[in-house]
Image (cartoon, rainbow, N blue to C red; front, top):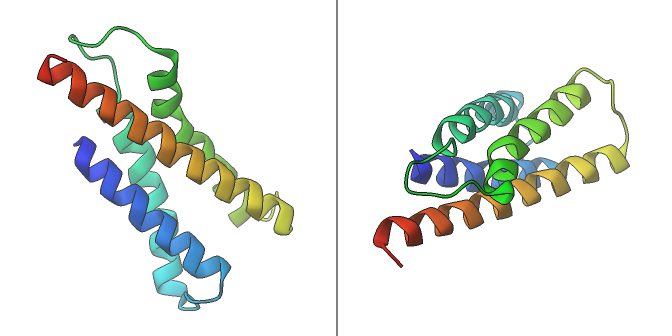
Length: 116
């Protein structure tokens, strides 16, 4: 499940950057960005939950909930509650932070499960 989350995050980054730079003008493809955000938030909540072989870690907890924060920010933008390029840049920054935190959590989990 963790690998699916990681792949979905990178697809999401590509869709978001494509939209920002005008490479994704198709509305149907853009709706995929929104749907994928919901899937990512759900996967993060499941895949990064407590694990019996990992000690509790605040960064893992942040990785678990950061995609949800990014999703909520994006939904507020979609509903025109947050408008402007500054809000878009913040959303993009939140997304990149999500990717970094999830990658960190994935690496930590991989090391712990390999016994290192």
